[in-house]
Image 1: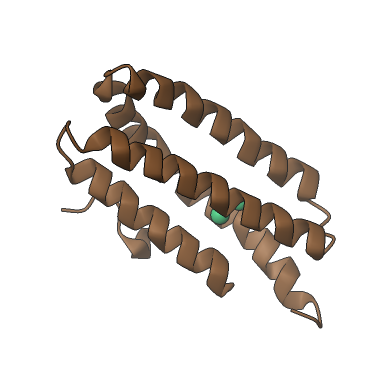
Image 2 (image 1 turned 180 degrees about the horizontal axis):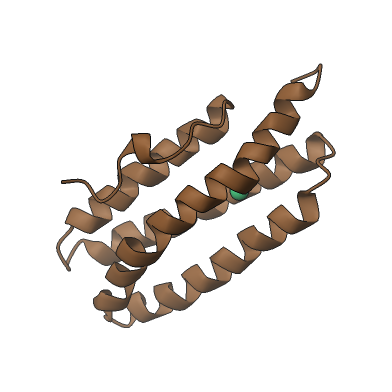
Length: 131
Ligand SMILES: [Fe+2]
Ligand SMILES: [Fe+2]
């Protein structure tokens, strides 16, 4: 069984954001199924993908003068900081820490973040005449 299904996560109605979230879910499931030898490279990939996704959302907030920009951006920063701590453990060979982050932390975080912050951002963008 997959760690997380696409149907577990809300579709926000913005193609680029939704596609990124799908990619994130695919990679989380790959990490969950990966052996210890493959885990660090996939974890690195998830980190980079997350950073790029956050940059894209941050860019959209700026472009569409999103009123919740500061709060949403700082949540992205906070999660990346947490991610970095786990990445440094995985890089030292402490794979179990990375597995716990992937299994016990990220799926719940994603569900909540998408339902609240990303959903609100997409709704704001979709209200704009130039969107
Ligand atoms: Fe976000
Ligand atoms: Fe997002």
